[in-house]
Image 1: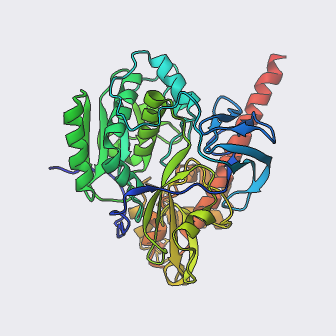
Image 2 (image 1 turned 135 degrees about the vertical axis):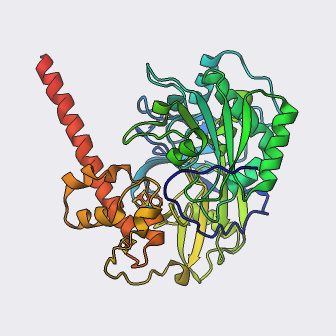
Length: 457
Ligand code: SF4
Ligand code: SF4
């Protein structure tokens, strides 16, 4: 079987999927959950409940704060205790709804049975509405509201839906387990997505290191008998699951600088998002839980847990035996693109997919030395950037040249850092430069808009 991959850069870190045999098990309910209003890209949601209100699982507790925003639903039944700022995992205050858990009573109308519903509603507008009302956002990391992504701007047309089942980040296995344990639901979700986008072909892309998932999904597609859905076996290569890399590998099309996948006819959704689409459309179930991998050589236990949204991270780790002394760092996500957790009392959000525990030895970086101009970082960059140059420009604070050299296109994959023999903190520096360039681009756009409005008056 031929294996597909993207055309430039990439690296081969050890996949370390040490939790791959761990079936998804439900985490017992925490005594309290904290639902952040900023769980998605776009405007924060606005609370629609008040302190003292009783809520059920699946009840709307916050509505979208703008066009690009999402509904938030209670993940538990209980009483709203407070609404106010609480630190997220990076230590930044976010408005949260605190709910004291009092049982597990679900809102009427949500189908909590395991019955598989394969017949897809014919009305695409009604489907999109269910996805919007279900608070579905991209669960592969971006958390972009899904109904917005499924509504291409005028003039653009989707030609293929790609379901990202690569899970190319080392250690992570929740998508793999979802493919194995909820493969039928994922395939129905894929069928819904391709219908909404105009009955276009759909590719479910899975990396070659998950042969059981590949075989299972092929089997499910055959059994369910949907047309237009195929499995594509991808080469094991990081970042195979990057949106632009996946489009390149599957469709041999390049998404231009600053452009969206739809500009080349692609809509990419993650496996967990396809499952969330199934839940919202077929079961009236909004996003109230998600699968979280807990892993790392020093993790108290390897696990894939079904976690209610808003569960404190410390509660999850305590359930598995607590944070061992040798764990120097907890990462939310994988080792390449994840973020260090600064506050274990922070709660999970819809997009939380993994907690990775690393020892001091595993996190220690060798001291950086001078660049030896070997070019390895440029060879590894899947976006075709020159990380050594961007690093120099960041140090020189040269915003103009950073933008000209496309720092804003960096996908923060860490391939440059991974390949640099001089151990230069390329990712950290380029991420900083990218932030500054994006800030300047946004400021320019706001100034241009203000000028155009002033000219109209
Ligand atoms: S982090 Fe950015 S600059 Fe470095 S390899 Fe990835 S895309 Fe390229
Ligand atoms: S990999 Fe490191 S040492 Fe080599 S060119 Fe890039 S920054 Fe310099």
